[in-house]
Length: 169
Image (cartoon, rainbow, N blue to C red; front, side, top):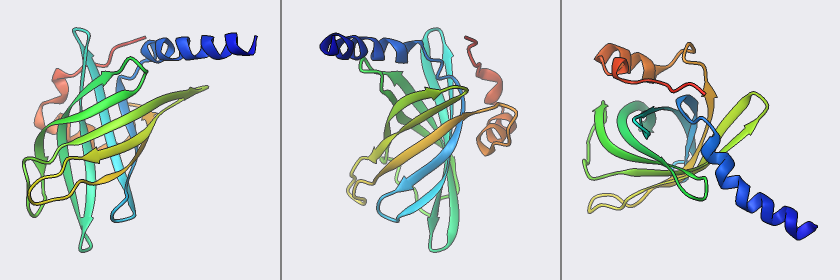
C-alpha cells in the first residue's frame, strides 16, 4: 500500500501541476546569493493560443542606488511540473551599464494551499565575458490584478498590457 501511494503521488503530481492556472500577477522577492540581498520581484504570466509568455520587473541595488529592469520572458511547464521562466528580451531598464547577453532562468515549483498559490525556486544567469553567473532564489505569490504593481503600471503606460490576457479557470 505504501508503494502504491508513493507511485500514485509521483504520477499525479506533474498532472496536477499542469491543471493549475499559472496565469496572472505574481509578486514577491528575488534573493541574490552574491549580494545577500532580497529585493522585490514581479512576474506577469499570460496564455495565448495555448502558449505561455510574460514579463518580469526586477530591482537591483548597486552602491546604494536602486535600478530596475523590465524583461519579456518565455514561460513553460516542464513534464515534471516545474515552471520554467527564461528571459527573452530586456525591454526597459535604468541600469548604469547593460550587457545584452545576460539571461536569467528561473526553475520554479508551483504550490497551492487553500487560497494561496506560490512559485518558488532557484534562478541562475549565464556567464558572459564580462560577468560571472549569478544564482539566487525566487519566491512569489499570486496577487490580485488590482493590487499595486510597478510591472502592471509599466505595461499599461507603455501600451503592452492591452495585448495581454489572463485565462480564466
